[in-house]
Image (cartoon, rainbow, N blue to C red; front, side, top):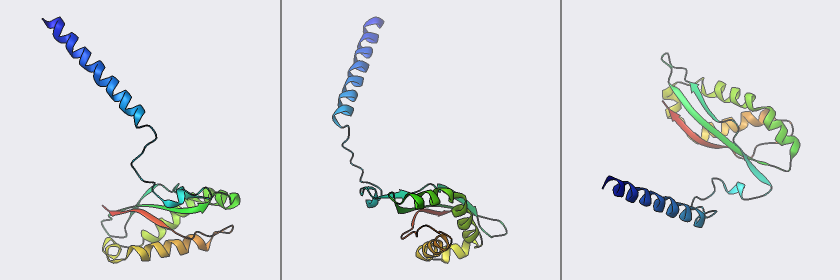
Length: 144
């Protein structure tokens, strides 16, 4: 009796695994998720998101944490500019931390995201030598 029940359970597991495998193979390459940025479709542009997610303490006496993630498009074909961007990752993080860390949580709440975006874009471009960033995307902006 127990042997038959275990045999039935094993058979059902084999069927579930086979059905999942067939379904996975049939859906291979057919993603329903649209690309994150239209620029990724173009062969000439890519998205620079190597800054990752930054956690910045605010200027409050009891600091809050600001979580921000930044990305921007750049031309893949402009190799010198790509190399400059890669070599300046820590500088981008420092500029972002210095700018946003100077505000309190209330000041950050009162600020418009486009103001922050424009100021960071201006600060990033001020020291770049081999090219300019045209657009800046704030992917994540959250106070904890």
